[in-house]
Every structure is written in structure tokens, then in C-alpha cells.
Image 1 (cartoon, rainbow, N blue to C red):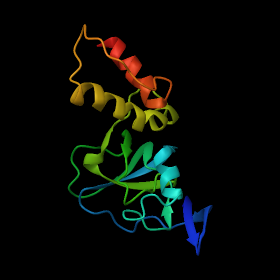
Image 2 (cartoon, rainbow, N blue to C red; image 1 turned 90 degrees about the vertical axis):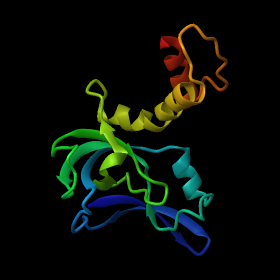
Image 3 (cartoon, helix red, strand yellow; image 1 turned 180 degrees about the vertical axis):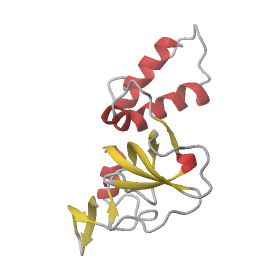
Image 4 (cartoon, one colour; image 1 turned 135 degrees about the horizontal axis):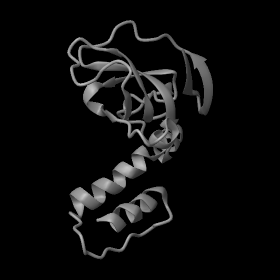
Length: 167
């Protein structure tokens, strides 16, 4: 399979398309997803610039936000079926979304909304999740409340504005 890899040789960091092998076998709770779209975010930029060296070792496949179709299930996976359309965020230590196939822990996936394309789902996953978490879990926003959203023109600010307007 093809994948977009960040490499480092001495002090030079580069990105290339490389051929990798598919996983030979899945762990009991893993799911193999055929990636249809991968979202790139500021996290990928920070990995490229070396800001997370304590968590990430190079080479690593770019991309943490993925939308795709389940192609194979680990032995213990009971919540998903082959052919399900899903989205998920990969752990920082793993990466790997910019590849033709990606392995996820089954609990790290959610069903892709049917009215979103794979590109829309992968591209909005991180910012949408951030905004929802901030408004719902941190602020516990309820109907009728007024809030100020700083950086409303940013990706996550844009989602926060939309979500706040429907609460």
C-alpha cells in the first residue's frame, strides 16, 4: 500500500510517498480500515516541525484523522461489521492516516454520518470534536445562554459558533 511518510536524515525533515506492507494480522480489538480520506491539521505540522519528539519517532505516516470503510475485524470486535463507514482519530504515537489502509482500536471509531462525504468527515473531525467537547463537556452550555467565542473564524471556532447557535 502507499503511504505519506515523514522522514528525517540528520537535520533534514522530508515527506515522501512510500510503499508499505499491509498488517499481516490484526490484534483481537483492532479494525482494518480502507482510508477514503485523511484530514491534515496543525498536529501534522507540529509533528513535521519536531514539536512532539517525546511522543513521536520518525519515520511516521502523516495523518491522524481518517474516514473510511471497514475491511477486516479482529477476533474480539463485535460492535462493527465489514463495510461499515467510520471515522476516527489515531493516537499521536501512531499516526498513519495518510495511507491506503489503517489499523484502529475498535473503540477509537465512530459511525460516519451518512450525510457527510468521507472528505467532509475526515476534514472536520478534529475541529468539530474540539468544539463539541469545549461547549458540551467543559462549558456545559445550555439553551438560552450567551457565550463569547474567540477566534470564531478558525476551524474549531467556526464549529463552535454553529453548535452554540443550535443549543
